[in-house]
Amino acid sequence: MSFLDFFKKKEISFQQPEPTNIRSARDLSGILNSVGVGLIIIDENDCLLELNESSMGYLGLSENTIGSKAVEVIKSVDLINLIKQVKESINQVEEISGTHAGDKNFLVSATYDEENHETQIVMMDTTRSNTLENVRRDFITNLSHELRTPVSVIRANSESLIDGALEDEEAAKKFSTAILKNAEKLTLLLSNILNLSTIESGEYSLDIRSTNVTPVINNAVSNLKEANPNVDIQVTIKEDLMVMCDIQAFEQIMTNLIENGIKYGLTDKSNTLSIGAKPVGQKIRFEIEDKGHGIPPEERKRVFERFYRVQEKEVLANNGTGLGLSIVKNLVHLMDGSVGNEQAHPTGTIFWFTLNID
Image 1 (cartoon, rainbow, N blue to C red):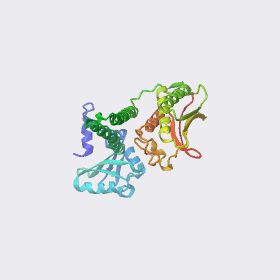
Image 2: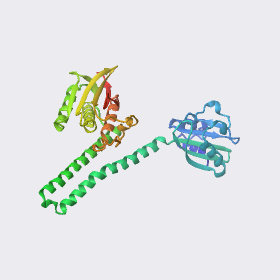
Image 3: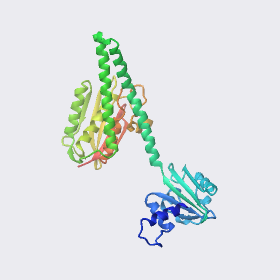
Image 4: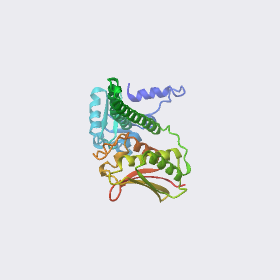
């Protein structure tokens, strides 16, 4: 049974019992097109007999190419080879790339209909599923790496306590402090993972409304100053600055960016962070500036990736979770804003994000 015959028979079961009510190849082409599946039919002379819109888009073809030799208009070498092979093996299923659609990947099923002397090809874009699988694999790999260090430290210090360090009060305090510190890091890591997962899954609930964010910023700064008394955080923002945002998401964004500046933007010569805001068109641009060592240009975009850290020896000693900026990016985008970073002058980095004006 050919691919078309299979679908035609399936179609009958969904229709009223009229024997003549069998969809044509063109009708089937429309059905597949509606779910983003490409359909190509090639006749016994290797000419294109049928193309739906999805296959045209995937291969860079048009209705004008119907009737042309497949080998003359289809630029994908993988697909042409598949077409040639299918007459010998009746059915072929392969994953191909290198079509007109750029870097996309496709799962292609090619069937040769001996009765009608036609080659029937179905193409499904698998790029997104492949990308999601790669993201999932990378996430698990990175997570395992992030968990390994604090777990190892907790285990080693616990073993030291068990082996008799409790008898030495100073040693016991040292090992217990290390255990507590790494347990706190694990708690923060798992909290950030849960937070980011909720955001990326679309389950994060936002209440976007006109909000005075000045007191929110001042509150975040006050809390971080209390935890980091040696850091000078200078705020230059007018009272009653109104933007469209979710208040909890905004506070999370501001807290994460200030914490990032504290961890990676301070040096022996400068312990200052500056926070400001200015109108840019119909948006407000918020800026958090440090005077640190800066970020290499080739790494600026990557700092918003999950678990990514700048590979500079000056900042490697600072242990964050590697998720804070990814959370920032996702929350800003959920509120119809944009986010980025740029070099400060003469040194340092400016992290910025925009939100709509009230």
